[in-house]
Length: 475
Image (cartoon, rainbow, N blue to C red; front, side):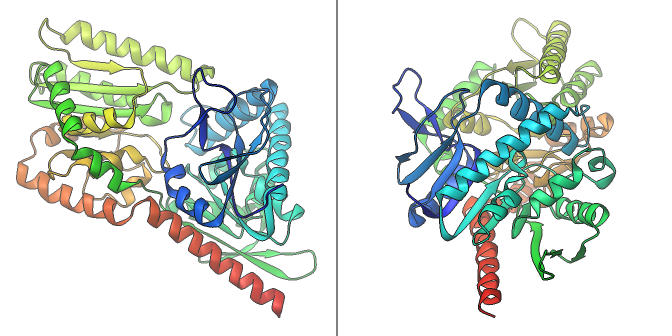
């Protein structure tokens, strides 16, 4: 088996099977992580360990576009217990401030341990002597320690893409000790926000009573020595230049004009783009907009809300209930306020290619990101990157990680419906000069700190950890 100097371990492989194609027909998956790591993988002849996305589907390791892919097979039962259960009905709601109640089932946890061990074993087999391994996200929180036990020669990084909760919430988890020990198997543990790294350090102190100093966590080893793991913020970003280039394309600009015309050329288009998830604050957004219509502060002839809600976790009960609630709310607003010529809310339960999303960003005057809790929210950054004319307004939840960087957005508490209404009205009426001043500042942040910078900063931290380990071994 081919062994690599750099290995990424993620729940999914960076490829999708081509619909209607054969077993060997794959295409690269969209997404910032794949884009960020592609050049690193090419330089290092890297390997990527992940699930193919289909239950009970066994695929041999194969090479794709300069990367060695190592598929991990999951049974239908494991998809149900490890992925839909433990990952998305326990960790996801718990780590997002219990917006929906997390479920705790021992059989889910047992499957999670079993699958994490399988990923760790695949990574151990794929990694060359002294290699660097980068584990991604909450589905694989036990992998760092399992991997360190199998391969102590490796330098191990872990990045947590979603929030890490305050200890008062985290302490609910029956397996809180095992998860922290799993994460501390890494040399570098990355989070989206400084607050998330702080929450993790506090959990380490409360559960394991280890010493923490700044971003350093002192971990006692069995031989009496102390190993230091670094836990700090590395806020993720987007491939900014790709969005700028698409925004400048004449065909995409023409499509943006078509979208506005198709909506009746309203004076203002408000836009929400989210996965259909209870963390995204879609219900709060619709409530605020409905109240603005009811109070006469906005008029359906002048303002249209376009809400893209891409399908998500459709077999999980909380998501099925959320879809019903949102679609009922949209129908009520439409029945109360639509006219023969104008639509109050254009609701789109679809996923769209990136070019169509950029056209939507260009068509929109105001971007509404009202997440109740979000690790980062890359849609906010995508909207900003496309606004090459320095026009448009970003209304951004202070509970999204992006708010730490994008402080010149109109920041809101989405739980405060009156405050959210005021922010929407303010955004609709914002003078062009203020729009330009704010957007120039936002675009500087997004263009200077793109996804390439994110991966570089994390990998530099891993390189420092590797160097320190070599110096310790030499001593």
